[in-house]
Length: 388
Image (spheres, rainbow, N blue to C red):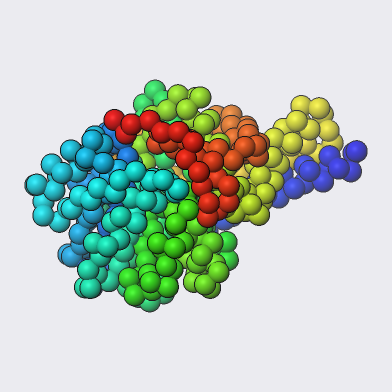
C-alpha cells in the first residue's frame, strides 16, 4: 500500500510539472507571427436555438473581423425561434448576413441539423467554411488567426477554442472557467487534435470529401463526429493557439455541473479513449489530496510541488491571454486567475465529479432538447421544449 501511495504522489507531482511545462510551450507558440494577407471569401455558419441573448453582440463581433470578404449565415430552427427575429433584424442592417430556417430535427441534433440547412448556401467562390457558436465573442483578428494555417496550406482543417469568461457573481461560471482554462491553454497537438465546434474552419475544396450530409445524418455532436471523420481520412487537425474565443458564462453551481457532465458525456460517447485519459488526469490530483489528508508518505512533497506548479501555471496563463486577447477582454479573466490561486482545488474536484457522473447514461440535454445517443452516428430525440 505504501508503494502505491508513493507512486500516486510521484505521478501527481510529475503531471503537475509536465502540465506547467506544456502551458509554457503554449505561451511560446503564441509569439507574434507574420500575419497573412487575406485571400479568398469565407462563409461563416452560426447555428442557434432559443433566446441567445448575446447573439447581437456575437454578430457584431463577426462583422468587425478584419477579413475583407465573408458572409454570415445564421441558421435557426423556426421563425418562432427568438433568435430568428434578432438575426433577421441584423440581416436588414447588413447584407452580409443571411438567415435560414432549418426546421425541427428528427433523428439528429438540432445544431447539426441547422448546420446542414446552411451548407447549401455555399457559393462557388467561397474558399473557406467556418462553423461558429452563437455564445462567443470574436476578437477583431480572430478570423485571420483561424484561417492563417489554411491560407498558408499548413493544414486543411483548423480549430480554435473557447476561453470561459465568468460573469460577475456567477459561482458556476467561475467553477467552469477554472476547470476549463487548463484545457483552453493546453498545446494543440496534431496527434490528439480535437475540433471545437465553436470555431472550426475547413478549406471549401476538401469539404465534399467529408460528405457532411451523410456523416451528420444521425449525429448529435458536430465537432466530435467531424474529429472522428478527419482521423479516418488522415486529415490533420491544426489547433490554432492564437484563436481563443472569449465565451461569457453565467451559471449557478447546479447548472455548471450539468454543463460539465454534458461535455464529458459527449466525449465519452464519441471519443471514449480520450475520455478515459482525461479521467485519469482529472482523478490523479483528487487521489493525491486524499493521500495527503491520510498522511501518506510522499504526499506532502507532491502537494507542495503541485501547488507551486499551479501558481506558475496561472502566471503563464495570464501571459497567454495578454498576448492573444484584446486588453478590454482581460479584466474578468484576470479576476478568475487571481481567484484560481486559492480556489483551483475546488475546480479540480468539480472537474473530477463531472467526469465521474458522465460515466453513466447516454442521455444528453442540450438547448431544450433531450437526446438518447445510441451510437456516435445514431441519436433519438426523447423530448423537446419550444425554442422560445
